[in-house]
Length: 275
Image (cartoon, rainbow, N blue to C red):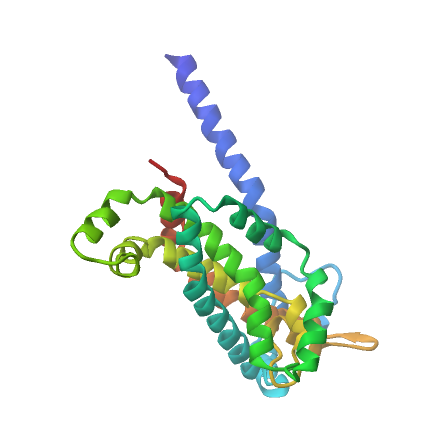
């Protein structure tokens, strides 16, 4: 009996030790980023680092007043919202078709498109959008972000559609619904957890996208990950400004993900269960 208690206590200790070891590095980086934004420029370059200091919001004020950061935040919000919405409109029927008719080969092609390094798309996209005079436009950035968001929506939703009993659709069609009506009125309402999960994940990945925005954006459509470059100049790096800007980029999405974490976990878990 004592041995069982000892083994159980040891397992508990090892579990929490492992959890702390995994969580501590990213949490330290996150806290350090926030601290960088709350310090002055002199405090950020002091050695040894100052962990006890008087925080200041001057860096955050400068980010908005000197660098027009609100405009970049709105650009990221517009592009991420459009990319997520279009991915859902196109990706949900595609995922349903792959799951319903067992179109595994199409699913593999979509997965390959998602796994292909994004840099390989840059030159073709740039040539096409320059020819169409769409560089520095919301259209160009939204279309390129679909490479990230649409495969994610499709692959997340395929498992949801596969887990749904086919008898529900059969019953709806017996009652007079067409295949399309059954999809809209029966299938999609039952898949709301999966749709919410897919939308959240697609939005976060689009919000954080850097490479496409770096090449295809301009003064009018620059997004927040690219706007951080404003704080780097020849011979000088504004660490305080970078910390404040990075906090403004990460914090809204982190808070949003924290409040919807149960929906994400529930959605991913339900999607992983199949009859």
